[in-house]
Length: 244
Ligand code: ADP
Ligand code: MG
Image (cartoon, rainbow, N blue to C red; front, top):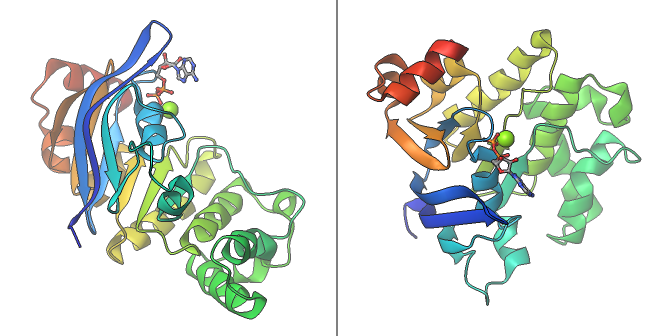
């Protein structure tokens, strides 16, 4: 098996005449944490959505966990099974309990029986500190708890890579830390992660590699301490001056 879990080459995406991704090359190796930073509108979410083919690229290739996502003949459902995704807005099923949120896809997609699915669900709820909320409904949870439940739900599917799109941006400030702690712990356990974030401290401490995107291109990439601490490009510097 290849050590490269995500490989994006020459990726282009336009919405009508608006060119959003103008030739992106990037990769994530097994066990690596790659953070993408950059101003609003620079194409970060579109890039993540192209990785699991929620958006169809206009050009270029995306390979994830050995599946060429951009191959028209790819078994996309199978390919997506290896990809866990956590969005900015908590996307739990509101009419299901937390436990059911974690078991439904395991049972439907992975064909696990109820006992096994619940066992794996509880293991992952424990991991994110929510075991005692298994029987609660999503609306009874704080935003931070909902986001941790969403992470646990993705983990229950045994993903090869986790994609996070600003997972803490919609949270009240006092709830951000718990979610970042869970993500930090995942990183330490060796999870392969591609994270769009505005949390510069998190990126600096946890990321193996940081990409700065602006205007649909990767302007700068390198080790976290270099890109955030000693940016080479003026665009990176002015972005960091605004957010730090
Ligand atoms: P970021 O996540 O970096 O803020 P996005 O990838 O969300 O940036 O958006 C990049 C640009 O693409 C923005 O100008 C946005 O308005 C535009 N865009 C994103 N999705 C769509 C869409 N489905 N249709 C039209 N324009 C879109
Ligand atoms: Mg975005």
